[in-house]
Each structure stands twice: as C-alpha cells, then as structure tokens.
Picture 1 (cartoon, rainbow, N blue to C red):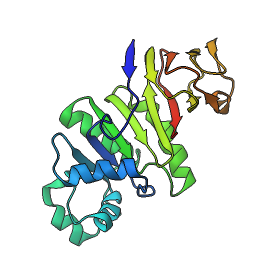
Picture 2 (cartoon, rainbow, N blue to C red):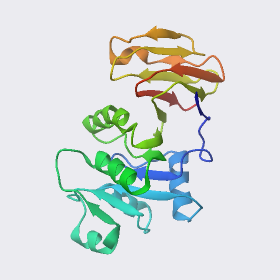
Picture 3 (tube, rainbow, N blue to C red):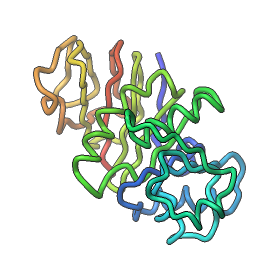
Length: 223
C-alpha cells in the first residue's frame, strides 16, 4: 500500500511543472518557486509554453525547460531561452500533456508538483483535471497544488495523511469501484454514478485509506 504524507512545502516533490493557468498566489506554491529560484538542492522547473511569460513577471530567472507548441512565446524570449526550448508543434495534445511526456522520456517517471493548472479559463481547468489520470504511467507521483488545496493522483491502494476535519473529495473519471475509509461518509467498493458524487467528504482520522486499481484524484482542501 502506497503512503502519501501530509504535504507541506518541505514534503512536496521538487520537480516543479508550471502550467499556463493563473499564476500561484498562495504561500506554499510561491515558496516552492522561491526555493527553485534560490537554487536549493533538487528543485527543477519546467514551464508549459506560455507559463514562461508569467514566470518572467515573477522572476528574471529562466526555467530549466519550456515545452509545448511555443505559440505563446515571443521570438525574443525563445532566443533567450536557447536550448531550454523543446517544441512539439502537433495539435493532438495540449501543452501539459506534451510536458509530461517530455519529462518522462528525458528523466523517467518522477515525483512532480504541478503548479498553475487552476484558475484562468474554466475549460482549461476541467481539461487539466480530466487529463491527470492519463499521466499515471508517466509519473512516480503527481500532486497538483492550487491556492486552495491539492489534488493527488492515486492509481493503487493508498494511505493518505490528512488533518482531522479536513475537506476531502474523490473524483473518478472511469467509474470503477472505490473504497474509502477514515472519512465521515465511507465507500465500500462503490461505483460513483456521477463525477460529483465523491465530493465534499470530511476526514475523521489522521490517515484515510483508499482502495482503487485505476487512476483517480483525491482533493484535500487547505485547513
């Protein structure tokens, strides 16, 4: 059974991906970007296409890589980035998917913290959430950090550390059986008939247990 800690700026994965949604404003995602910018050990940053423009408004430093079709990056900035640019012009996948495949192909399956994937246009947010389960084979661990909480991609039986009273939601895009314990409204091999049916639960123990054999998302709200 895989174990997930209570995530903080100290325990979140250090391979950072910045998507082109709303730039983070909460303390934890900004602290991760600051740790990268200060060159702290193990931190890397890959931008999805136009996210590099937003990063440049936060810091003058260049990311380790920029991936996408590069339709949102000016020629001057592309020249400045040099060999940090990895252009994939096909329109069959979005820039986040291009980035996940690039990282898997160049570094293998790694633990990743995804920033900037929420906010902005709502259709982009929904598309990003629907795509996260498809990255299960590309990542060792994937945490999508927002200003309000974080999503964890689970694809096997898992224990997740939480705070008692923390709001918990489960989202299963493939409608496969799920068991969930340690919460106010447990599940016992249930198939949730609609996507929203696993939302707005509440942790009653410091560890919740999830039984799944297909990729699902668990969301933990900030406390």
